[in-house]
Image (cartoon, rainbow, N blue to C red; front, top):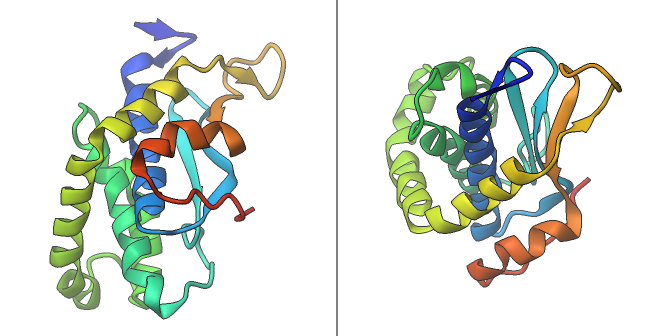
Length: 182
């Protein structure tokens, strides 16, 4: 089904990708941003944003939290891979951030490749264990009405779950949801 040239299946895949970042970050004790999670359309292809501690390029991360941030970043691609489409393109920014966290020049560097297998295994296990909550958050994002960033222009819009609206969705995780990150 198409809505204004945007495929619902693609929006759903992006929503699951971003929901996985948020859910796994929360499970690992990383702060969640007040801006929450959103799927945006600024061209015919949807993109997503998940605001959690350490996710942004260039953000400082305590050494004790680096592995958890990487696992949360990997979780997005793992969730996205359950849907048809180009996963490689969807994870480019995540891969860039992982390389940056490991102080490597690129995602395919030996430093990154050496550290990835155990972290990927952990990320896979967490995504499988918390899939019901990832699915619940993704469905909440998808069922939210489009908010038009430029009225009348369907290529500048977003669906978002922000701030306090995240808490009831994440409640089944039985963890403290820290919404202190901007």
